[in-house]
Length: 65
Figure 1 (cartoon, rainbow, N blue to C red):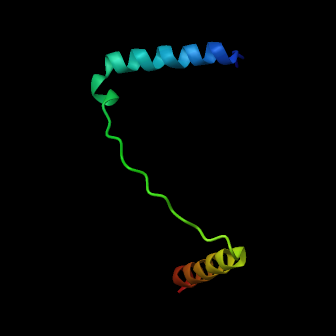
Figure 2: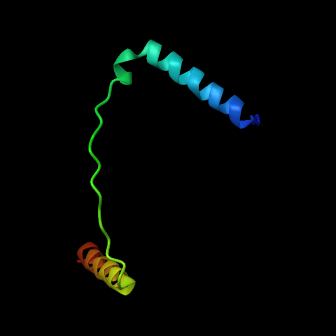
């Protein structure tokens, strides 16, 4: 496997993307979708682990029933 410097690798990536966007112009168009922020309460992290354990137990019961 060849080892490249960061500048060489960046140049190769930009060259590749330029060739692909010329060859497939439809793929270059995309819609920017808004990102939703998910808030996770970190006041009591044990609640997260308890919820994950409950989901795991529920999933195991559904699979094995």
